[in-house]
Every structure is written in structure tokens, then in C-alpha cells.
Image (cartoon, rainbow, N blue to C red):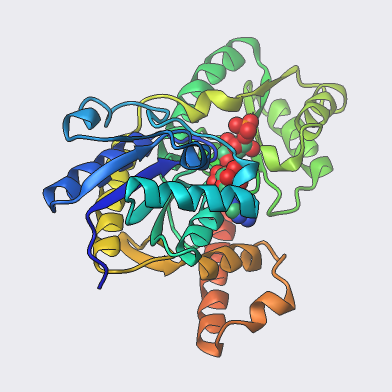
Length: 354
Ligand code: ADP
Ligand code: F6P
């Protein structure tokens, strides 16, 4: 088995509250096990440029409670090219990096897989507010982002009630309505319009008109970013024009990507960081750390990426063919379980929003 002397850690893609806690978990647990840790700054860009510095136990003091990522993040198209990858590999050799923990979303995992194939064992940790990594029940940052949304929307409700208004609230989630659905439930919203399910807008307007006639003053309607940037303003206009309810459109945007991580994200990130180091030291590579029913498991990155595509209905026959029957069965079961959970929440939200 490979002897580990020194590992690197990086954060990449969209930042997420809790990434610092994960880096701290990696650094502290590796050092406790006699392994040196190098911080790779600015994601894969830093690996290419050699922006790499040692991290001591004290370098990760006072970060567990901070949002953002002190290692900084980047989107690095150059790392998708053979030249960029060659340069990154040369720096792994130069700095004596025996393995890497890469914290980010699905793009970051594709990069991690490239490194693993090039001979640098790499383990991914899911860090994205969107919770759009199908193989894990939760990604780091999701819980904090949702808590930030409900804090903000509670304030909107106050003013909405005073003025008998509706607020149409668009929340982030590039390819997933998880944030919109769960924050809509937690905010007591009238509806969550997400790309995963069809919403009959005419019926929604009618329902709002009826509720208004029965005395309801404020309304909250959540829209997922995945509906497209035109959808929220269009729905807001129809609420004003057709349901005759005074309505304002609010795009919450990047505000929910910052802020102090919640307790759940700090604990989740710490556990995942420690688990990732354990996997590297066990000689594992090309895996992503996933949380399933409260337990941490390590999933093959390619399986996780194709599972995502299968869940979204965009996996090709060709990519599915490279998996065994057992793997395909498990993929189907997993995707169904997730879709069922989403549907149950969506139906429940509809039932109790009047
Ligand atoms: P996220 O990790 O949040 O999904 P991105 O999709 O922007 O964010 O990916 C983060 C980075 O991962 C990219 O900027 C790039 O450096 C790297 N990456 C993404 N896709 C690939 C790929 N196919 N091959 C190699 N590296 C990739
Ligand atoms: O993936 C996280 C996320 O915040 C998405 O919700 C959003 O669509 C996207 O990143 C925004 O990316 P950027 O930071 O490049 O504007």
C-alpha cells in the first residue's frame, strides 16, 4: 500500500458554508496521524500555478465558524485540458503530494477523477449549497443556505402581512429545487415552483384569489433558480395582473452562499474531512464521501456522476452500459428513493399550503 507522507487539500467550484470546517477536519486528522498537509489555494488553478503552502494545526484555528473558504475557490477551465493536467501533475511531484482531498461539486469531482487516473489518489467531499449530488443525502452548505433563506423570508412575511402583499422569492439551485422546496415548507409558503414538478400556474392564481377572498393577507411563493431567470418576474406579474394581489419579486441570490455555517454543516463537514483522510490512508482513490441515512460511505466518483445524470434523466445508454447489473439496479433504486422523497415533500407542501 502507498505510504502517505504529505497530502493536499483544495476547495473548488461554488463556495459553500462549512468548507472551512471540512478543511480543518482534513488538516487536524491528517496531522494527528503523522501526515503533513499542504493547502492548495484557488482550487485547481492553484495546483497548476503551484500556489501551495503548508497548513499547520494552528493555520486552521478560528475557521470552523466562518463561511466562504479561506483556501479560496476558482472555476479553472485550464484544468480540463491535457496541458493544464500535465502541469498540475508536475506540481504534485514537485511538492511531494501523495494524495488530495478535493471539496466541491460535481465539476470538482470530475477533476478529482482525472487526478486519480493520473496516479494522484484523490477523494472528493461534496461542498455545494444546491444539494444536487444525488449520491449523498446532504452536501456541505445546504443546511446553512436554507437557514439563511428562512431568516430572510421571515422578514418578508412581516412586511407582506402589514401590506397584504405577496412576495415571489427566487432562491438558488442551478440544477436542483431542493433549497426552494424545503425553504418553502419551512416558511409556510403558498407554493414552491421547482423544475422537478409541473406547476399549474392558472390553478395557483385561482387558489391565491380564493384564499384572499377568505381573508388571507400575505402570500409567499418560492421559485427555484432552475426555472430560469424570466420565470419569477413573469409569475410575479401574473399575480399582480390576474390574481389582483399586490406582489413583489425578490431574488435572494448569492447572499445565501455566505455566512457562518450551521451546526449541522460544521459537524457534517468535520466528519467528512476526517473520513476522507481515512480513505486516502486506507489506499483508496477516486471516491466521493457521501452521507446515507446518517452514515458516511465512500462512493466511486464515476458511479456518483452517472447516478446524477441518471436521476436527472440525461444519462446516455453508452455510459450506462459500462456498469454491472447490480450497479444499475442500485442506481435505479437510489434515484427512485430520492425522487420519491422529493415527491412526498412536494405533495405535503401542497396539502398544507392554503
Ligand atoms: P462545481 O464543482 O461546484 O460543480 P464547476 O462545475 O465549476 O463547479 O467545477 C469546478 C472545477 O472543476 C472547474 O472549474 C474545473 O477546474 C474542474 N472540472 C470541472 N469539470 C472537469 C472535467 N471534466 N475535467 C477536469 N476538471 C474539471
Ligand atoms: O452551485 C452553487 C451555485 O450557487 C448555484 O446555486 C448557482 O446557480 C451558481 O452556483 C452560481 O454560480 P456563480 O457563483 O458562478 O454565480
